[in-house]
Image (cartoon, rainbow over all chains, first blue to last red; front, side):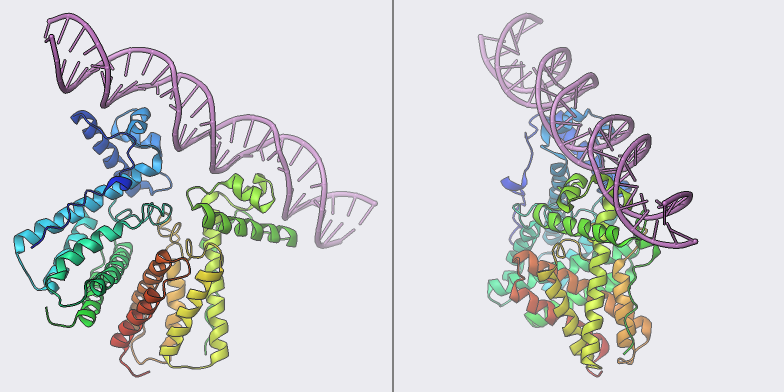
Length: 215
Length: 215
DNA sequence: GGGTGAACATGAAAAGTTCTCATATACTAG
DNA sequence: CTAGTATATGAGAACTTTTCATGTTCACCC
């Protein structure tokens, strides 16, 4: 089973002004991201403030600007970190399971996604570029594409279809899953079960229709 | 065919500090919203500035604050206006057509939605509370619900199902349509045809599966 | 362990935005 | 025509974002 591309969230998506080299600063950057995540959860994106982030992270404002060019870059970095974690978790899970029917792969992925919604602060607000990439920054272009490409690679060996058709279907499925699960979490902070179930149903139904039942 | 509830976008969603009473001021408020829409299209939400809005609208900043309590309220009002226009257009269309198979109703609605994406400035960025209601303001709660309720009323007479099941299915369908069409417009400014077609396919497929083929 | 340059930390203040308010003008009813 | 309300305005108060000069810590070398 080919590993999902390590999702380094490449160059252009690394808006850091300076990459932290020493450990202490790397840790500080993490703290800043943690603080941002917590604050976004608590106050929402609009009420987010660089001063607040710094205070919460226990650093001076200047330190923040040592690494990030501006406020948006912080949120962007948070987004990237969430994406990395997600892809990492998916890899982990798939390694454990070995080759499966694609049906189960989809299930695993949705479960991981759910798990992150529940356990990662700020995840439901800024998973894959809701606020930043999608809404504002069109050049960084589609964080989702990273995921879609990874999943396409993954399923390409199991489904007998032209790769481009596969990628298209996965793009659609990804978007639908994202929208529906977000809806579930809007309805209820822990994810409304009825909506979660329907999300799974819709996604699997769509993929089954597009791929055919056979693996 | 029962009219869609006039979508006054009720009390709590009217965050105006003062309702314009005289015509000149009503017109000015419209100008401010137009300016906001244009600027959001051009610069994105984050780069939006009250000063810029005022300048573009040809009024003083103070005038803006005469009616809106804060910047977000402006965008919220823009959202509300878009919603009103959408519901209005749907009503219009349905009045013209008379009773139809729900299949055609869905088609009409999707077409109107597409049309607005293409012709209404800022629509693709802030249609139904993407930026404001959904991302930040949880108390105003679901603009989408207005639409969903309207559509539920509309279809209730044609589909032989418990109303709550209907509402649920429409909620899902609405969310899916929104996500997929947004994706289509992200891929291409005029709406990628392939994605638009797939959006229609997915939505209709879902509803057909949930309602059964019969009207 | 002493020295050196790069990485890092800091917070006061410059630059930029949001929002208020005292003042002035336009409208409406009577 | 007049009082009373609605509206318009922009300077500046309040708050944010971002810069930068200064001081500290680290990694490496002798």
